[in-house]
Every structure is written in C-alpha cells, then in structure tokens.
Image 1 (cartoon, rainbow, N blue to C red):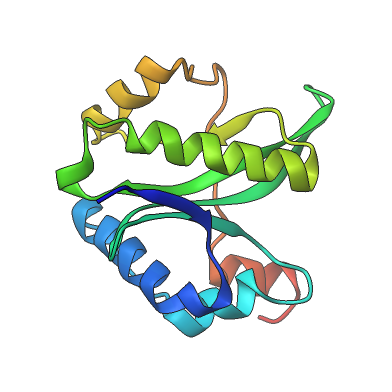
Image 2 (image 1 turned 30 degrees about the vertical axis):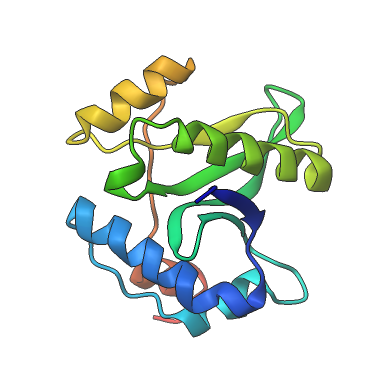
Length: 158
C-alpha cells in the first residue's frame, strides 16, 4: 500500500494525537495533550501549528511544525516540534519526506526557507538521522523554556 502524505485536517485530531502519543511513549515523555487540545490550537482562527500525516489505512508518521522568524537569517522558517515515523517505516526515508512536506507547506504559508528543531541528548539515532540530512547544531545556543508557573508569574498571576 502506498504511503500518502497530506496536511492534517480538523477531522484528524484524534489520529494525530494518537501518533504524537506514540512518539511521547518512545521518548519516555509525559503526554498530556488530548485531541481537543490539538484541535483548539491547530484549527483556531489563528492556528498555532500545522501537521503533515503519512498514512495508508493508518497513520505511519507525523511532522508537527510552527512558523518561526529569524532576524539573523532575515526570513521565516518552521520549527519542527515533533517528528515521528512508525518503527516499521524507519529506514525508508519517511522522516525526510515528512520534513520536506512540512517545509513545502511552511514555504507556501509563511515563506519558510529553513527548518529549526531540537534533538534530545539521549536520542543518538535521531541525531544520526538529522546529521545525514545536513542539519547542524547551533553553536553557542541553549534551549530554554518558561513553564506554566513561570508564565503565570510573568503575567502577574502569582
């Protein structure tokens, strides 16, 4: 059966969340999101992300991405927060196809011409995958996050 790639639609929220939950499980990450959370952000008046699904009669892969703008590059790009391929599809270039489809969609929507992402330190296979595609680590940068409590404090909601 041929694998088809397409941009996810509202009706895909449950299937999308199931695929992302599989990724979380493989990474031993907590997965709090529900399909309704994805639906409320992806298909709102101002969508917070887009996703590409790879599927046959089931979802075999997903790329979830958002727009990002770089003043140092002077252009828009996409930030890929989640990339997953089913174990049986690994080694068949599905990950590269998903990234290409996400970049093409981001290019049409936002003029994206670069991809930014994060790789867990304890994911050597993912690192090798991205290295083979030509991704390079950003020198002199560290990734930070402000959690819910920190955001509440920043908003003065202490």
